[in-house]
Picture 1 (cartoon, helix red, strand yellow):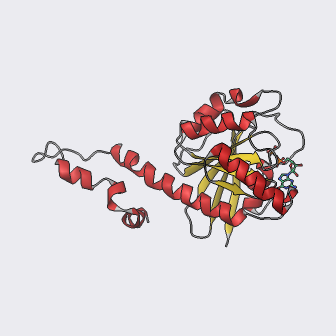
Picture 2 (cartoon, helix red, strand yellow):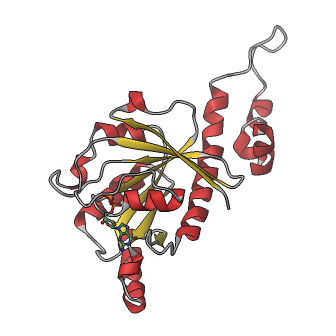
Picture 3 (cartoon, helix red, strand yellow):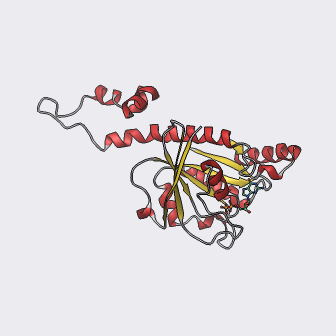
Length: 234
Ligand code: GDP
């Protein structure tokens, strides 16, 4: 399937983030977990700079991706936590500003290190900040088959959530990850619609000073079902 991908911006604060309302997926993980490599693997091109030297910049790097006919979205690559900055206490203003925009989120963890304290703390934070969060276990190619099964079992019991194993090197798991991304983007697009509508309430007319209750309820997009909503968008 065709993938369109481009770098959009590097932001140091909320002011630098895009304002066009596309769905966003925040990428969170320890420095060196393989975020840049995974972005490049998803984009099928070298968009993000990979490096063995962890955690220097405090930037949110924003990429715009679209696969096939699916809706485009932003991947918001957040600064890695873990090294000198001492774990998710480094979830600073920038991270808070990104999560205030109500993104979906993927927490990346190294498949070889289940249950790290910093990853658990990050998951507590992320899963409290957004309802649409999942875990991605990176560098799966570094483990032999039997080790993978054991490690994945451990990750799943630590996070009690969907954990998708991937390798940016071999491409294993990327299709599953894309499917997960599609569903997260769809949920974001559905969930964001009522707030957009509520910003433009119907104007009162001479005959109807207030919109009738039942009428306004049936206009709520979440109640009309996904197919009608998407039809309206196009
Ligand atoms: P980031 O700091 O989270 O952006 O991590 P990078 O993408 O820069 O990756 C850190 C290191 O892990 C680099 O040396 C990558 O080549 C390596 N790496 C990343 N993903 C994979 C993977 O899926 N498999 C293997 N074997 N190495 C990986």
